[in-house]
Amino acid sequence: MRILNNFKSSMAGIMLSLSRYPIVIIWLMAVTVMNALQIHEAFDLYSRFLFTGLTGTMFALVGQHSYERFTSKGTNHWLLAISSLILAILYYFTMPDNNEYALIYPIRTIVLLFSLFIAFIWIPTIKRERIPFHVNFLAIFKALMTTILMSIVLAAGVAAILSSVDFLLFSIDYRVTLQALNIIGFLFATIYFLSLVPNYSQENPEVLARASEVPRFLEVLLVFIIIPIVAIYTFVLAAYVAINIGGDFWTNNLLEPLLVSYAIIVTVVYLLVCNIQHKYSELFQKIFPKIMLAVVLFQTVASVLRIQDYGITHGRYYVILFGIFSTITAIIFSFYQKNKSGLIAPILIVLSLISVAPFVNAFTVSRHSQENILEKTLMENGMVVAGEVVPNGEITIEDKVAITRSVEYLTTWTDGESIQYVPDNFNIYSDFNTVYGFGPVYYITDGENPQEPVGNYVYLDWEATPIIPLDGADYLLKVNFYSENEEVTYPITEAVTLTLVDSALLILEDNSGEEFLRFDLTDLFEKAFAESGEVQKGAPAALTALMETKENEQAKMTVIVTQLDKYEEEISGEVFIAITLK
Image (cartoon, rainbow, N blue to C red; front, side, top):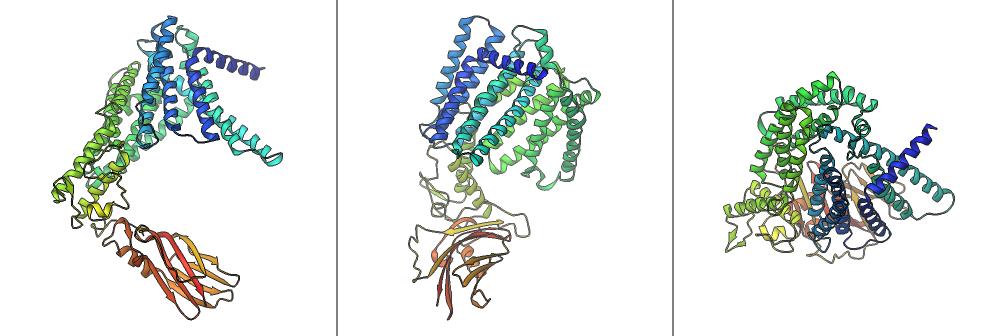
């Protein structure tokens, strides 16, 4: 009976969500249909339509919560719905007509969706002392976790049933499973989640009590597991900082993600434990925001120092914005009552919107920063004459790294605009050497020889060598190898095999073990890497440096290297092997 009552209650909640969020449901159905079409047959502009559908959904959600919080007129309800549609259409026209430059727009869309989701949580709590932000945050968190669990169980069950039918009864197109998961993930899961979102518009005490109720399992998890883990993590982080405070500590790639993740964890846990009456919870609320403030200061200093060395990238832009947000959050959590926790929401929304706003967004600021670094480095080395880049392979390794990183970033993360000192249709792998006079250089080691990068990548220049003579070989093999491979055998004929030993030695022999020909690849690899002129990554090489032949009275073997990748002492790559048996 209890199960039946729970089922009826869930169905009633779902039906209520359909009437509460009609515009949202329409958007969700549109997204589900787009996904279904993409699964059936890929179509152009899918990502553009998908981003528009997702932003339209979130605009409609925020509009519905704004309507519930600030007005009760039916005309306003439809006005907000129409506004969400107009905003989504405007967002559609901010994206390009094709799928080019796809790396930028997903990030912008995610940031926009995130800011709208925070507004979705925050708006019902505005100027409501009985419904503080941390209470609604808990309610949304519970709804989200419940939805994820239900969706995983349902998806696993449907996938298992379809797999069983496919295996036991009759064949099912794999796309049927994808279509089912699409419906579960985008339609069922979201509608079920919305059915669990509290409606505070009627000021119903029962709704508020249910929203602020902390399940016993979650309380135990937070108080006796999460808080101790955060405390231990704090101790480990403090020990790491204390031990490594000098030297390259401030510019270590590991520092930023450690500190940012810590600030995120403390913020989320704080908002959850504010709803729990327990001495551990109270200690956490008093102590950890102040620790977070110190951590954020470390993170901000580290980010500023890295900007001086490498300029601003969109990632570092967001790290700095998050540092500003975390600093303000730590101050609010440390010196204000927990009911004022909602102050962090508008701050986070404003900073997120700034990061996607014209002229000051993450990618525009990053582009200008990297262009300035590129121009400065080229000018200092006399590589710009009459506004044109003059190749120069004699500059320092540090400047080569700076040029490589800036060019790679600008060619990867721009939105199609022309870049100064980088030719149009520039390919970093095939054109870099011609334009700048050296191959891309990515790393500088901090070992005994700081002038050598640890990595090296060389590949066959197919444009310079479109045809390779093989002199009538009997067999041609394509072999991919890795340093971890100890011994790999390839059957050539029923009586002859080729064995690759330790990714560096080829042995051609018959089944009795009689050796026909032995080919040590070490010298060929060294010659291939030396072709670039210095240790670097991404340098094309001529066929003469990547091809070698060995021959005796029994066999002839020609090895052609198409690509090699070296990291420290580990070498992997791809070779073609032509074999002639005499």
